[in-house]
Length: 143
Image 1: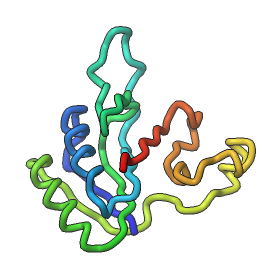
Image 2 (image 1 turned 120 degrees about the horizontal axis):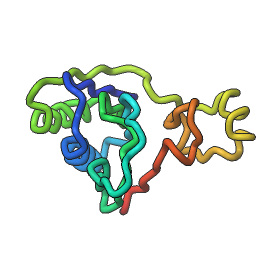
Image 3 (image 1 turned 90 degrees about the horizontal axis):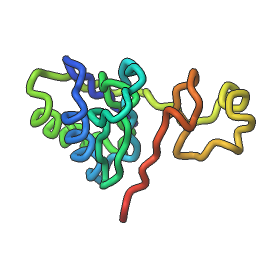
Image 4 (image 1 turned 135 degrees about the vertical axis):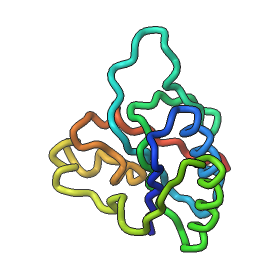
């Protein structure tokens, strides 16, 4: 089951970092995807787009406009809503549906030179107009 968190405003890197760190520790969340408009190339020496998730530094490529979550069960939605209320006081909507692809496609085969080249955790997380190495970062849970 997937849910979409749709904030009423684009999020700054600080809010994105705080929200993702809170959502990441939830047991019911399997995967997260951040969507939004692409940011222009960063100027040298600037670090205002760097966020830290699970102790790992990441460079944001987009300004967060929505967050997609793959979750285990419907009860997780209430927990997600409570976290969002803390970090998104300007409002948000949560939609239930299918937002993250679950299977490899022919486009994946063509783009990445073979379906066996794509790790299972990357399915549905990539921008098909960009190179895989440039647009997706997978952070494994530390158990």
